[in-house]
Amino acid sequence: ASVLASLITFHRYEERTEKHRAAGVRYKVALRKLEKMHTVPDSSMLDQESVNRIEEKLDELEKSAPVVPEDINSAVEERYQVYSFVAKAADLRPGQEDRG
Image (cartoon, rainbow, N blue to C red; front, side, top):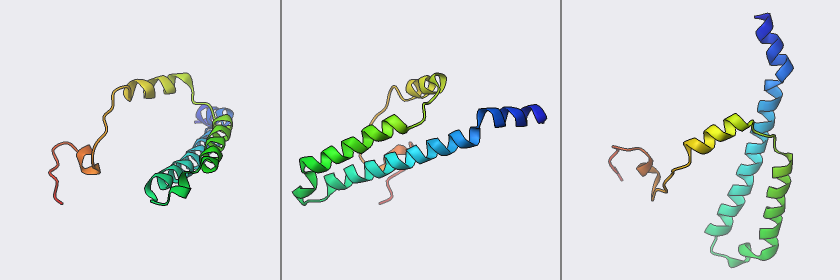
């Protein structure tokens, strides 16, 4: 138990987890802004200045986000190498009939 506690303290897993969570939240905010720009019929949302601001925020986030260890990054890349888009969320669950 003491060895495990020492490893957890040494590697600061709690701190690293919080940094990844915070980066995920910032990415989600940027994605919501992009989604809003594409769903609002008002074309003023798509002006170049707005796009540039979001791009700058994403660049800043990329610089400040914690680095994912290479073995984890490789495993995720391999797992999601093949993907497909679906027309609706119900299509994500194979074998489920559309009940709507």
